[in-house]
Each structure stands twice: as structure tokens, then as C-alpha cells.
Length: 459
Image (cartoon, rainbow, N blue to C red; front, side):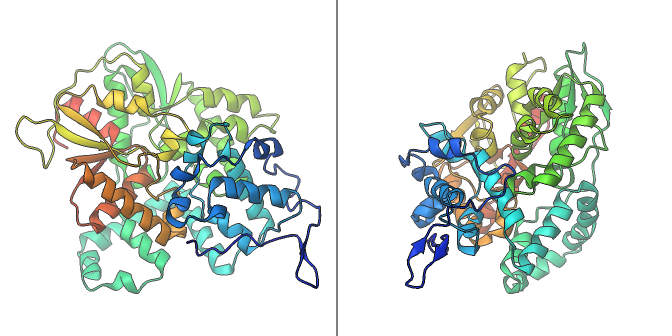
């Protein structure tokens, strides 16, 4: 049962307690949730079995069709944008599993993003909530600031202080959100920069741009390095501009539309100057956003067409490799925990913004399937989110932890040697959830396996 309550946030209440519609939309005029998309929903319920919050709580207003109904109520003046109404949208992970399940083709992604933008403009959050979100946005969307933050965090780990703090249970005394941040913290690596230009091995087949990401750049630099090496080995000249900003994905997904638009323009400007054939992304959340720049900038007379052209060039790294005739020879993997001649068992976790938002599901499996002596394992409830969902595991830590524990149980049920996913948030969530469950299973990005196979190195 949801602790959110029910959607009783109606228009106006009369003296006898009856609800009376105002007939006036609760939304402002800038890109409200589109009525034609709302009306596409026939409330069939196919979305219910894959919606994480409905699975946990069985609360109608915390399901996709329930939230769409709330959107409609607000549009017709039957609901106000108040704390009760907002709580149902804050509880949504934005995982888009409902879009894959929906037989009517409802674009829930565009509806939830428009609704969240309305919330950020029309609703005043409590001051503590505003401060926490401001910290996240001012840090996680600025790679240079995130890099500065990584320095003391690395010292915290290497000095042994983290081990001591956890042993005596200090994190359990922290507020839930700070506790979640400490729990999710990975082993902070030494800084590692990808060169701005990497030549192709042998004859050049493509000139590609590499989106470095923010969290990926700082906490998973080995993923960017592996991506660049594999692309070069496959005959691609790689351009990785060091000055590239955040792509705006985190802001789009949380309703901070104006800032996201500014970052999208800067990203387009930068990669246009690079004159690349394809733009490669190795973070699912970033990929779903940059592939939709055409929609984000649809009203911008200077950028609308340029954004469409930019998005048409964007590919997830494993999606791109699936389209490219392989050139580099692949060797069997050697990994910790594996032994003998048996295949290395790899549990593949579909990142939500890859499988649902981008509809990229078979391609990663096809690329990984080229690696000799590797067995791909399918995880139960593959369509259901792990609980990461951008900043969800920081702003809704208890729900995220419950979903993470559920995912960890499904992962370990197939007895893998390692787990693979295509998004940094998923990697953090899976590492944390598996560790909490007491399972020492390595978690990697899929491109790391391809890189290790090409180079013949141990993971």
C-alpha cells in the first residue's frame, strides 16, 4: 500500500465537503501534457505488471494509467498541483516500461516530462527539498565540479575512513538521503581522460564523436576509455571534445526544462564543429535524451532542424557496434570467479532508458554474443527498473532500495559470474544492492567486456 495517500487534490471544496471543478487548467500555457497523448490511454491495465511502484504498492494512482488520469484531472480543473498530487509523480521512476507494454502506443515519456516541468514551475517544494535538489543539479550536471568532489571522496576511501565509518554504523545515523549517497558511492577511481582525438586502427571507416557524460566521466572513466579503444580498433576515428557540457538528461527527466535546453544547444554547437558521422553514447539515460533533442528544441527557430539532424546521428555504443561489420578479433574472456573451460556466465541487465525509451534490446546481446566462451543469462523481471532512475535513488531512497533488493535477488537467482548493464546509474545501483545482499558479483558496462576481449586482458 502506498504511503502517498490518494489523489484528493481537487479543484475547490464547498462548505459541505463536496468537490467542485473549477474548469480552469492547473497547467500554464508552456507545453502542458498533450491532451491527444492523454486521450490515447484506454486504461487497459497492460502497464500495471511492469510499473515498479504499482508492483510494490498496488495503488492505482501510482500506476501509469492512474498518473495519466491525474494529468487529465489537472488539465480539466478537477485537480490542483499540490503536495498530494505532486507526490504521485515524484514517486514515478520514469522508467518507461509502460511504453513497451502499452498496446495503444501512449508516449508516457513525453507526458511525464511535461508534467514534471509543470510541477517545477507551478509548485513550491519545501525548502529542504529545494536545497537538496539544487545541490544535486549544481553538482551532477557539472563534470568539473563532480571531479572536485571526487577528490575528498577518494581520500575518504583510500585512508580507510570509509571502512571504519561503515563498521561502526555511522551511515545508519544519517538522514535517509545522505545514507543513500554514502551507500551508492563506488570505489572512486583515479582521474582518467580520453584524448580529444584518437586515430582509427588501420583504414578509417567512420569519424565518430564520443559523448563523455558526467557521472560516467568521473566515476566510470574506464568505460569511456574502453569505448574509445573499441571504436578505434573497429576502424573509427574518435573525437571526444574535453569541453563538452552535460547533455541535460538529468534535467529533462526531472522537469528542469530551461536548463536542459541551454545544455542541449551547447552540445549541438560543439559536435557540429567536430564534423562527425555518428555520435556515440555509452549511458542509457543520456542516450534517450540526445536522441530526442529534436522534440526538446521543437520551438527553437535556430535549433529545431539542427537538433533533429544531431539526434539522427546518435547511437548507443553497442547499438552502433551491432550495425558495424566487426573487424577486431575477439578472444575468450578471463574473469575473476570463473574457472576451467566452462563459459563465463554474464547476467545482462537491461537499462530502462535503453530497452524502453530507445528500444535497444537485441543489439547489446548480439554484440556480447560474439565474444567466445560467453553465456548471456536472462534475468527474471527484466522489464522492471532496478531503482536507479537518474536521481530517484537519492530523492526516493527507501523505494529505490526496495527495488534494488528485488533486482539483486533476480540477478543472483541465475548464478552469474558477472553482471552487465549499459548505464552508470544502473551500475551504481546494482553494485550497492548486490553488496547489501552479501553477494560479491562484479558489475561491468558491456563495452568493458568487448574491450577486454579485443585486448585479451583479464576483467
